[in-house]
Image (cartoon, rainbow, N blue to C red; front, top):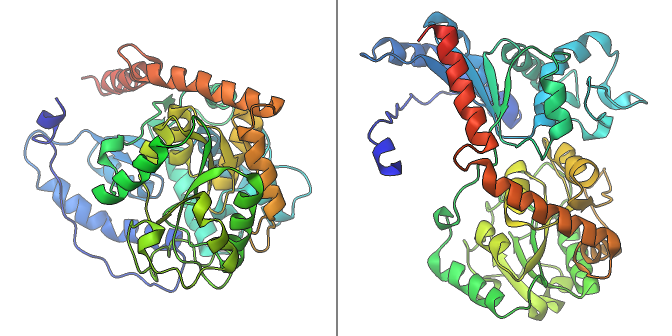
Length: 427
């Protein structure tokens, strides 16, 4: 069936667009979407029967929704993040009207009807500076999304039950929301060199069950020299075996080198014993015999699925969280950017499958003792809170496995969405 789908997918290559590079990535995406509108319209207008009847975009792609109105198409948005972020997006135009000054200066948490409140410092990145162009671009995106016919979100009801109920109450928006997750990539499709994959899995095969902590702050982030030092010390203090995926460190801390991972790397997906590590701090070398370090890329889903893996120290990208849930692995949360702070709050406070590290906001630095303590909390069999987290994430693993089974909740949500759209269109 999957093979047959490729015969009905028509990929259209749009022309390259020149946009200014002296602004942030989010603003560039918004500018790109607007510039592409006439090109997308041209392509649709030249299509022969059958004409497209539904337009599905992601968050930033929603800026092209006027195309759907022009061609009388149903409008859908797919959120790759969580339902809490959907609620924030739909409620942002209201917040823009009622909140005075910067959101980050508010003394009280940001309120969304029916949802858990959001700490101002945890808000989605576009909301952190109301004077920045990105905020105004995001506000327009929110306005567009409030007018769509439906929202798909990569979550499932048991994972965010309270928020999904709130989204369907009509108090935030009237837009139908369909939780259709967890949608995650298959392990066999990971972009990892076979030699490196075998090296990692063979090493894991030799470790005891749930004895290894997997460490990765995402393929888009380069740790600072200080962060690598504290991480190495924290891993040593924890006494746990580890698999650590990283790139050679930056000389500065903070988020201004986010999405620059690999630019200065001298290897790609090669175990540390085969790579140049001259830029690493001394503390890094002391722990190499206690674990495995992989440069740039590791077969993440296969690592999380492995029986030796007992925890994941993660940046809390939503895809990584869903992979952890699907594999039954608890999380140590080190959020860095975008929606990751909200994601970290969800897993720590709402779902109860992880612990959020105490991060120094100015430099995104975590002390080594904090790292060690938190790793031990989620992995030590004697820790009562850790046991509860491991039990809960394993329960969610079984629920997630059934979500996309025949007549499973996410399968039914997707089916109901298209039935509803077909009825609306009179098909």
